[in-house]
Length: 202
Image (cartoon, rainbow, N blue to C red; front, side, top):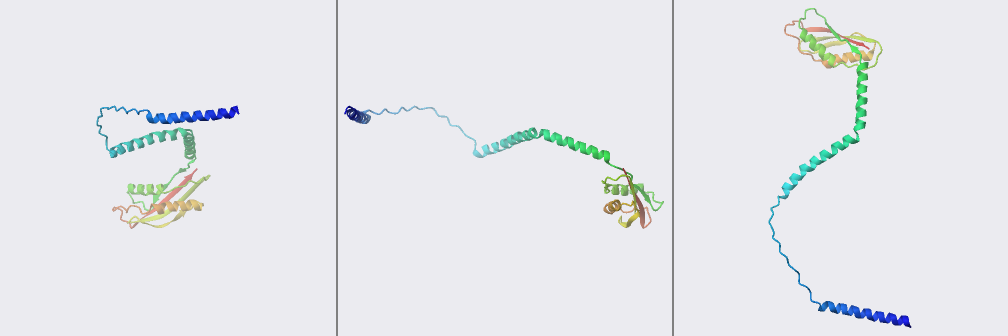
């Protein structure tokens, strides 16, 4: 019984308190808001297009400045190793390169135009590549005729090296080098016979 009385009393008290609070809110006068005025200065802002144009190059510069050093730092050791390996490979290739001794002889003894002979030799040597590892010596003599216009005729092997692959490379070097410059005007013959000797020595 005592507990039920306590519950009823507490319930009535809470109702009275809530009623007083709600009724008191209506009767309490509201405070008026305080208005404070501050001086305002007008500021001119730059246009949006100028801001975008200024931001774009700055972002590009920042990206370039940030990305490049990061890549170098991350892969610096690997790049150094790769460079060292390439240098070693290049040095071994240079040491293992064979000596080549090309020479040229003419079918006629009356040809005083040495500059023309040098042009033929230079052009053929530039187009001649032999990269096979062959122990020993190889020698191939190729014969061909240069007509007045600089074109070649009758290209064939005069002396074989007994290595078909090497002979074909020598023929190909002459074929790719043609046409040569026209024959000098002072040379009265219709053609110039050339013997080109390719030599390989390890």
